[in-house]
Image 1 (cartoon, helix red, strand yellow):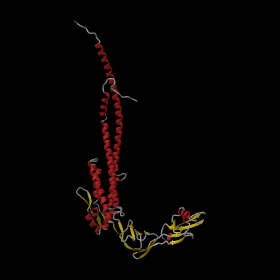
Image 2 (cartoon, helix red, strand yellow):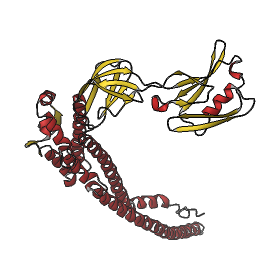
Image 3 (cartoon, helix red, strand yellow):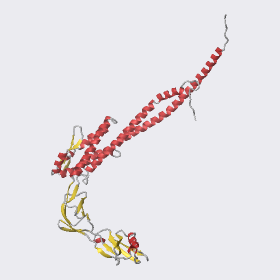
Length: 429
């Protein structure tokens, strides 16, 4: 280990002198480190901004999807009779549904076993079937109701029948239940089991026309609509535009757009003053709101949805105008203009954003340039660090040599002074 203690011989504070000299020598390196920190801040800020842009892109994607923006909601006049859900692509419908009977699972049971759940169940091979499945249970001698229940439930080929033991007055019964309801899932079982609840399909009418379903969740009778049958009775089902959802989606889009706008202003004032790429984002996006798309011979823009700009360029939704638009005969066409797959209004906004956010987009290109500058600064810093090490070593060699000379001079001086002090003195008196 090298011990540095320059100035020991002469008594001069050489270490302090070297430290101060090296502080001056490090100034170029300090400037590079400051530039590096500034670049790191710009890279980080740009990454945050890309995330904000991506959020606006996500909102534009939602506006371009007719399954989300302008979707339909369904309602049932009597949810005790049935509830209803809709899928994308649903249009306006109105039907009267009369539920005549609900789908039910098939159930079989054994006779009463007086000795309860531990009653003996005869050994043998027992065949079962339900729906498209069949399986055989091989029961050994000395088995009980519990053993039979477990053998059925645990069988590798059984996913359609469930067995349970009921402990009742006078004994126990083994009960079989089809997991899925409907006639198609009726259970076939050995003679030890007898039916006590028949399998049944749901029976109902749609506007007076007869229909049936093996389950109480009916998905294929009214296109785009799922009926969840609850009880016998009559209920009207209908669909309508989910206008509240349309407004909420527009408000999310407005909020995200304004956040992009305020971030652009902040970047231009701070980390990227006067940057052309950053400045172009807000101008290109705002231009997109004035682009038009033709539907049925009429041109529509985002402003036809009730969107408006204030004098500072901030976007807002005029709710009064939006309500008027919802009541207009052009409402469906405006929504269609927004959600057209390739050329829709929302797609145009999304395409603008993608130019900046995609993997090789404008923001990533700017980031690459910043990272290149960062690498360049790192290279320069490494070179300067090496030079500073060489410079400090040179200073130490020079000051060590000086220290040696000064020490020698001091020793010589001390010797001479000592000799002079010892010279004899003469009295002339």
